[in-house]
Structures are given as structure tokens and as C-alpha cells.
Length: 155
Ligand SMILES: [Zn+2]
Image 1 (cartoon, protein in one colour):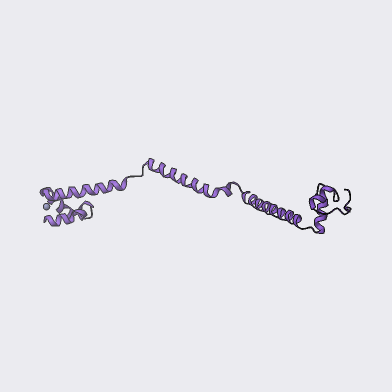
Image 2 (image 1 turned 90 degrees about the vertical axis):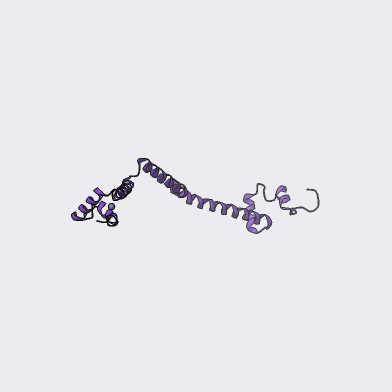
């Protein structure tokens, strides 16, 4: 058997894929040919190395780090979406806040309109809201009107 053929057949030989006859031929050649024996040794050691690499299991440390990282990422996700999950009333409170702000704005507008214009409704409301009686000097002064009973004489 020629060395070239032996070397070509070595992978199959090491993989135990040859029939008994071929295997015996290679074995016989390796027993008497140092070059081919060396080639077979190199090949088998590299194959063994591959086998060892494949059989390496992830270490416990790797697993621990993996789960620690998974938990960290889960917490980060929770922090992003968790505010409404942890406080289910938050949207309701936000709604109330908006209503309250609208109410304040509406109240301010109502107050301003009452101050600038004077309608019968305002007069009526003023009667209830104003700390002064409708015909008191203070009230008249505040509204800038002339007292109805003022005739230019002594006040
Ligand atoms: Zn040989």
C-alpha cells in the first residue's frame, strides 16, 4: 500500500469507517512506516482535541453569570414599564390632575370675565361672593361707580 493512499485513508481509518480488510492494511502499513504513523498521530491528536472542545460544558460560573445578566435585564425592563404596573391608579390620578388644571384655568377665566364685564349674572354672583354689601362705600369704590344716592353733597 502506498503512503499517499494510506494518508488519504487515515481519516476514515481513525473514524473506524473502514472495513476489516482495509483497516488491517492500514494498520500493517503504519506498523512499518514511521511517516504515516506520525501523520496518523497528528491527525488523531487534532481529532481528539476537537472532541475535547466539543465535550466542554459551560461552567457553573458561566451559567451563574448568564442568569445574573438575565435577571438584570429583566429588572431594567421592569423599571421602564413598571411605573403604571406598580401604580395602577397613576393614569386615573393623571386624569384628575388634567381635570383639576382645566378647572383652575376655567375658574381663572370665569373670574377674569367677571372682573372685566358686568352682567346681571355677575351682579348676582357678586352679591354672594363680595365681602362687602352691594351698596356699601367699599363695594362702590371697588367697582368704580358713582353711588346712586350721591348727589354731589356730603357723603
Ligand atoms: Zn507510509
